[in-house]
Length: 126
Image 1 (cartoon, rainbow, N blue to C red):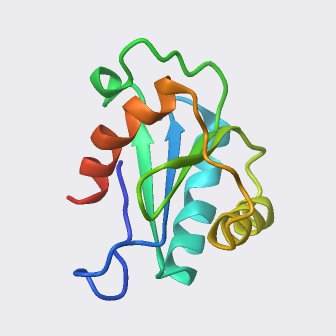
Image 2 (image 1 turned 45 degrees about the horizontal axis):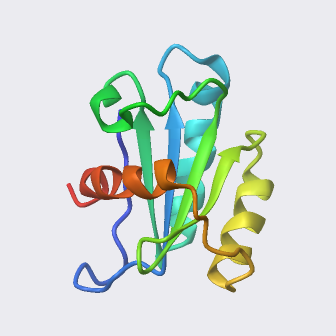
C-alpha cells in the first residue's frame, strides 16, 4: 500500500520528501509502516511516500534494493540528500528528517538516486 501525506496547504511545496522503499513480503517493513505513517502525521511540512518496490519495480530501473527499509530523502528542490538502509526505528527517522530539514545533509551526486526522484515524487502527488 502506498501512503503519502500532503503538506498542510496542498499548493505548498513540501520542504522534505521521505521515500521508504520496501516490500510487502518484508516483515520489518510491515512493522515499520505504522511508525512511518505516524511520523508523517506529525510532520506536515514533509511528504512521506511508502513505495512497494515490487509494485513499482519499473520506477527503479537498474537500481537494485537489497536491504530494507531503504530510505531516500530529498529537499524541497527534489535533490536527494540521503539514501540508504536505516534501522526501522521511529526516533531514528524523526532525527534524520529534522537534520534534513535543517540542511545538515549534503546533496547526493549519485545519478541512480537523482534519476529515481521524478517517478517516486509522482507517486507522492497522487
